[in-house]
Length: 152
Image 1 (cartoon, rainbow, N blue to C red):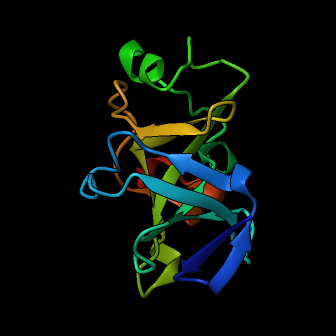
Image 2 (cartoon, rainbow, N blue to C red; image 1 turned 180 degrees about the horizontal axis):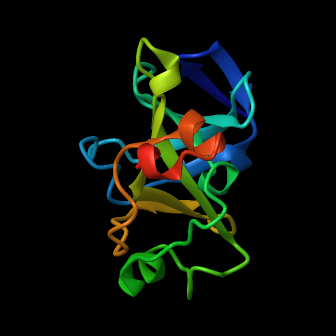
C-alpha cells in the first residue's frame, strides 16, 4: 500500500496498482511524473492525483461516457512509448481531463489531449489527437443531452 496526500480526500492509503507513471508528465505539468488513479465520489469521474504535490490533481472522465464516437487517433510512436501496439489494444485506458468551472453546467472535457494509460505496465502519456473534430472544450452535459452542434 502507498500513502498519498490527496486534494480530494486528504491522506489515504492506495493500492500500489493504482500508481501511474507519466515519463513526460502532463502538458503544463511536465515535472510531475507519478500519479495515482482514484475513483471520484461522483461517478463517472476519476481523480488523477500527483504523488508529489497534493494540490496537483485532475478530474478525469472516460470520453465514451458522453461521446460514443470517440476514438484514439494519435501518432503511433505515442502509443509505442508506453508499450502499446495500437489504440484498440486491450490494455488501453483512455481519459479526458475535465475542467469544472463555477457554473458546473459548463463543465468541459479535453478530447484533443487524451490521457492514454497502458493498464498492463501502468505507464501513461497525454497525446494530441490527430482528428480535428476533437477540441479542448467539449461541454459534457450538453453533449450528453444530444446538442452535438452546440457542444463542440
